Every structure is written in C-alpha cells, then in structure tokens.
Length: 73
Image (cartoon, rainbow, N blue to C red; front, top):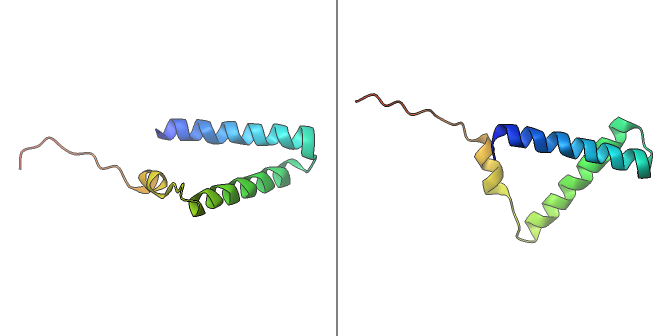
C-alpha cells in the first residue's frame, strides 16, 4: 500500500466515523472521532492478541525507503 493509498484510507475512515457519529452517536465531532479511533485501536489490538497481528505490515511503513544508485563501485 502506497503512502497515497494510506492517506486516502485515513480520510475515508475519518469521514465514515464522522457520519456515524453525526447520525447515531451525537457527540461533538472531535470527541466522537477520538472515541471511535480509540475503539478501532482496541479492536485491532484484540485481533493481535488473537493471532491476527499486523506488526509486519505496520513496520513496512516505518522502514525508510532507500534509493539504490546504479553507479559502479
């Protein structure tokens, strides 16, 4: 997943959470988004405990991409 796709996914989740908050929960927008983000992080942590961890995928985003030069050594 590229950086652009990751940013798109985050914007999509924020819009979806904002809609759910506005229609069903009714909290102030910043509080509602924070509560739903916290709930999502707990759910993902629960998946990790059950053996569906995403550490390797997450580590891929934090490893700096190095450009290899084609120069002869």
